[in-house]
Length: 290
Image (cartoon, rainbow, N blue to C red; front, side, top):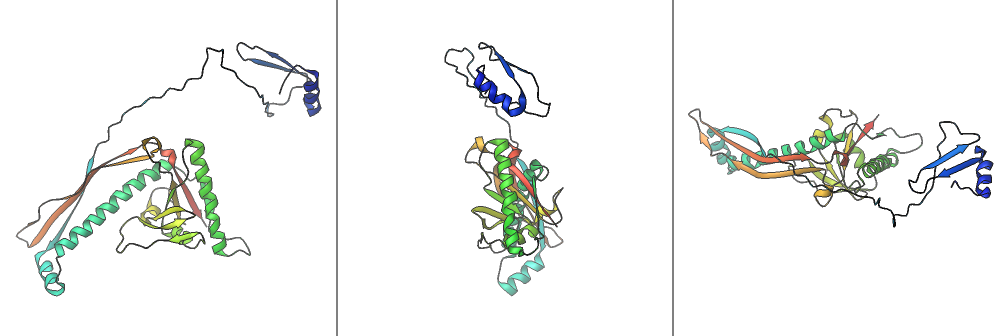
């Protein structure tokens, strides 16, 4: 942009900057500009240039380092008990195995606990909300039409993820009960079949092609908004694009069942896994406001 020719000098003068005189060092690339009428400190000065590295020993270098980090698997356990009288009565009345039903139920609870630990890890990493959405529609617009604007802060969060990581976009979102009521009312939302007896997080459908999961626990996390919360993020296809690593070691295992002289049977189950936060910038929060 800044050259020594008179024609370019006249162009700069016509923009109100006065005469500009340039001195350039072609070996170091340094440019010195002298203004007869210098702009104020708030005015940005932009210089357009090209760099030819063919004969230069200073070739740009990118260092790539691969480091390893240990992930320790920790046990997360739960115990339960039931009376023999209850087991006999249930079998007599319903013909079922109470012990088997309890095992299935406890496995579902442990699975929900794993989901919640993952969500809490991503929630904390996301930090404060990057966008907000008011659930109150402006005048002359229906609530359903207004709720469609929730896609705007989702797109804002997606752009923030890309700006900070240069990786991907939003390809999943988690909502609590209050924000789920908004999402389910949006025209672009497509509901999925809710699993029977769902405990913890489950996929409730898609919004504009983005998978949506409902987790009521989200609204009780630290810093959650009282009118609704949305957690969005990007999940890549390999470790280079990983935000969080979930490393299961042993999914579910049980202790032997034993019965005390109080006629109560006892059993415990556990899951062993490790978690490692890799890149917390892959996750963003959106607050729902009144």
